[in-house]
Length: 115
Length: 112
Image (tube, rainbow over all chains, first blue to last red; front, top):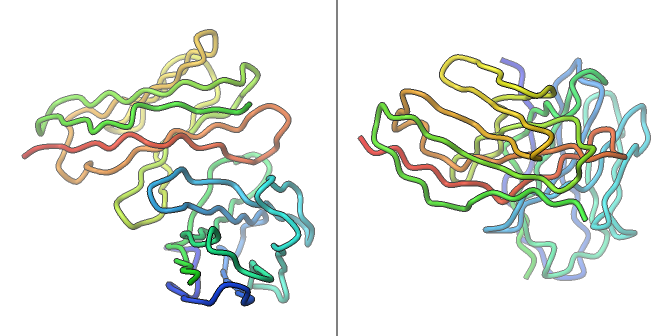
């Protein structure tokens, strides 16, 4: 069964360092997303991406964040200068297309710990 | 402000019983509603989507939507211990194409 894969599963970094989280969405999916979940809190939308550009982003997704699809398979989230409050589980997700909005397939997540 | 509210639980039901999970949302124009299941330490997994008023059944799961009351529910029939998880209600609010707003989830425990 096709799945969304994420690496690394866990990353520990020092405050102020840059972090790149990687995702391989399901191959025939057209829309890609990043969500995050701070421990014990809600799953929060960060950004959606389609046709090589951001289609929507939340208030959380400020200038410290960026996304990229550097090749035909990977989708990355970069945090330029991490803060303590960026510690969370980051989920990548993908969906097929316009008719399945909200029907997302999530990866297993990348846990980011900022010290 | 976009809000999706759920009772955090925990909700405990005996094996074989019906579990009823409820969700309310604040944006009246919302059109798309989803239930996700999240096991502890895992990612959300889609169970049901519902877009029209009424009931939608899929196996042991029934989603119910009442847009006038801004209310979505999920019924799980013949509950199994493997259904023990946190159930997340999610909504796409008006003005968004695909930005899911999640509730905080209801923790369900099915007792053997």
